[in-house]
Structures are given as C-alpha cells and as structure tokens.
Image 1 (cartoon, rainbow, N blue to C red):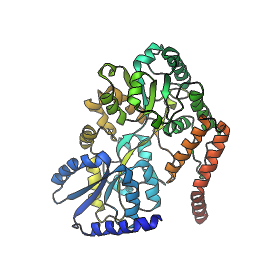
Image 2: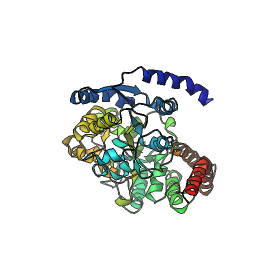
Image 3: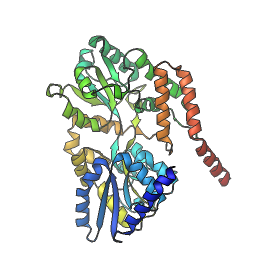
Image 4: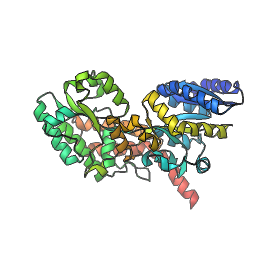
Length: 422
C-alpha cells in the first residue's frame, strides 16, 4: 500500500531533480525555518560567487515522509534540516554522508563549540552525521507569584522539595487548581524522569528497560502527581487554551520547550508578564541530576549529493556564530553554538537562561529509528496506569512487551552484525 502511493511521487522528485542546473545546491528546510533561511542563503551566495542555492520549504507534517520518498526515488537534496530523532533512521537507510573528515578539516566545527548532549544526537556508531543547527530541550515554566504565595521564592532543585512545593501550591490555590500540567498525550515528562533516575530506557541489546527499578522509580513519582491531585489527569485536547488556564492559575507549572517563551509573552495578559519565568528541571538528588531531553534540528549532507564540498560550505556558513545569532532573531530558535549565547540578546533574557543551563545537562534519547513509535507506547501505558486500567507494575511490563515487539527486527540485525564480526 505504501509502496504504490510513494512510487509516482518518487518519479516526480527524480524528474524535478534532473531538471535543475548542475551547479544548483538543493536545500530542504521545514516549517518556519524554511521560510526564514532563504534570507540567510542569499548572503551565502554573495559570499560564494557562483553558488546557487535552491531552498525548498516543506511543512513539518510532510517532512518525514518526503525524506523517505526522496531516498527511495534517488531524489534526495544536497543538504537538509533534520530533526535529531530522525538521524538514526536515515543512517540505517544509508541516506546520509558521514561528516567526520569534513569536521576534522574545519576549525571550530567539532564538538567543543556545542552542547555535549546535543552533539551526541548526531553521532551514530561513533561517526558524525549531522551538525546541530538549533537546539531544543524542556524546562519548567511556572508562576512565580503562585509559588511565592505557597512559601517558595524560587523553584526547588530536587524532587523532595519540589514535591513539597507542589503540595503547598495546591493548598493555597484550593479546589479546582493544580500544581502542574502533565498532559497524558505528551511523552517527555515520563522520559525525562526516567533519564533523571539513570534509566537507559532501551538496553544496548535492544530490549525495553521500563520495568527495571530505575524507570519504575520515575514512573511511581509521575503517577503520584496524578494520584495526589497535583496534576489533572487530562490530555491536552481536553484543555481548550493552556495559556488562559495558566493565567487563571488552574495550574502553576508546565514542562515545555523554548517555543513557548514567545507564546507566553504574546498570550499572557500584561499584568502577568512579570509573574512567570522558567527554571531548569529539579533532579532526584539535586540540580546535577536534573537532566532533560536533547532535541532540535541538525544540518545533514546526503550521501547521493554530487556537491558535497559545496554542501559542507553551506553547513559551515549556517553554523557561524554571527549567522546563528541572526537566525535566532528571525525565528526564536535557540542557537546550537555555545559562544552565541554570550550575546546580550540571549545573556540578558531571563527566560532563556534556564534553557542555557538545561542544555548543559541535556541527554539524547535512545538512538534507534523506532524511537517515535516507542513514545506512542509510553503514552498509551501511562494513560492506562493513570486512569486505573492497569497497575503501575502491569503497565511497565506491558510497555516492555510492546517495545520488545517493535525492536524485534533491530535485535535480529544486531545479532547478525555481531555474528559477522566474530
């Protein structure tokens, strides 16, 4: 079914690629970034006479399938933006060019200028396949005024004190109000808490590690927030307007990403603009254990590109600190290069600073092509446990069983690879 649907599109993509002039570099970018990057590319062309960059803007909703279709049809671009969680899949397909030799030959392009956890999302089997373009992680957005009323002038940095603060918030706010909003159809909180407890989530052998003690401790902490009335047991489609509910004080905390800095500034009323901020995530034992997700988008060069040297020049240009700063000002996307954060526009941004701290403690999720399918199973079993359809222990056993089925082919390939090396 999928093959018959993709085949005509693959032919169309091949025909389009063949019609372009041989000196044209094709660059695919997604969503808002695809609209904005054209402005930066014009300056690259001025700096590199003879270079011609054709930017194709693709909606995020269509990006993953279009990348797969282009690979099948032999019509991949030269350079593309790519979500970090897609890189292992594209490496498995053999679509991406390894960049190690280019990185070694290019001063300033190695891992030292980047956040370690973000850089690690681009490394598969000890080879580099992408260069971070912009970064993403999750932190706490919270109402400073409500926390102060509860007796906490600042966000606690460990789970014990954080739990006390959440209980104090529900006491002072009264019925119908909650300490934190944790939508049942979002997976990052469960995964973050598991990583904070040291869980690998997936074992190196390709099995789920969710029923193990480390993730079980994290899962119990998460479920206690619903069980004790600190978080409402709802999905995000059951909340009409989260910004409105945050303004009303229906909940005082929310774990979310950098795009919401701009949204909170636009959507909250003027009188609340100084009544909220961000904080890095509390850890089980203190701030150093308060890790979060390593996310964002990277720039990749495709193996089939006939212009890999020029493609690498474009990647280098878009990675320059001055260009990354312009990109941040145009999009609000957080820059991947660490030195860019010393600019006053970021160094003086109160809400951005929590992200800077958190990015230093960001860790990648398992580097497997099936990760997005795994997150769906995590949400399914979390909701079953929260709504009482199963016990926590049963939910984790079921989660491991579901994940082990998903990873069956991966284990088979790992076994074959191991056998071939013996």
